[in-house]
Image (cartoon, rainbow, N blue to C red; front, side, top):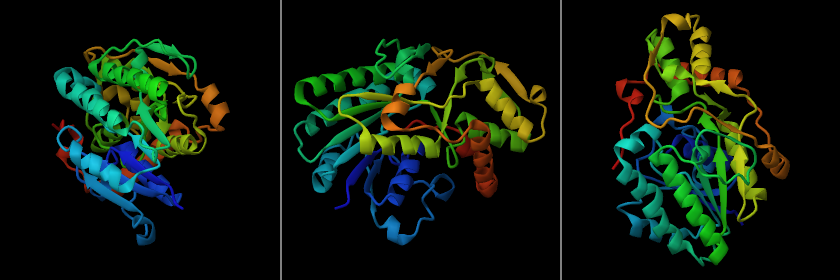
Length: 332
């Protein structure tokens, strides 16, 4: 019998990629998101054959307003596994809308988790979290637990992680915590750094780098993070946490320069330094050797090849993008 997986936040970039990945693995997928399903330029599974798409069901649900609808969806389908991308995910905007951030990422999640306690059909709850819960730090292993959040966004994640650990200890709640480096890949919204740099380079427009782009990050390509989550479905152990990264580590400036050079442009002529965002982490370096060993996982796509794949996607849909695609609009 096919396993049923509920993906919360299935219309996010990462959620959308995972829907496509798991459908190809022959799972039954139920997706729910605040927004309606994305148009083809931001939907990586829009061309999957009908025999695969028929295994996907979608419901538009606002967890803050439609909680009873979410409960009914869960009871109707009784998923074996829930994978949780759902939440307010923009760091800078969490300073402007802290109540919305905590209402979505903490309070509504606590209601959901309490509802799920002792639901025997649920075998795993995979929470997709962020290394930003540690602030600027070298995160040496998956058991690293010295929380030091620098933003309301990061604080909301560290808070809900701690609550999930309590539920595991007291009620054997089947949680697995996973923290990933920055996601990227084809079909990502244009307000994220890699597709935005590609878009602006393509238009020969200036690129504003907050803090001069000195902060350092690792980036993980869509195929690799989907495979990491698949490994958690198959091999991940309840009550444990896992961290996923690439072995490459770049400043944001280096990434943007790389993209402009691919477009045969001189980055010095196009990059503008602007003041840094409030509370932005300077860098976090994830050492994921224990995850690689425990799950037999590794990232396969290096940043140069990954960016080339994003450029191919951008070129395919370049005449479909508009000004709205570059702007993030917070959803209430």
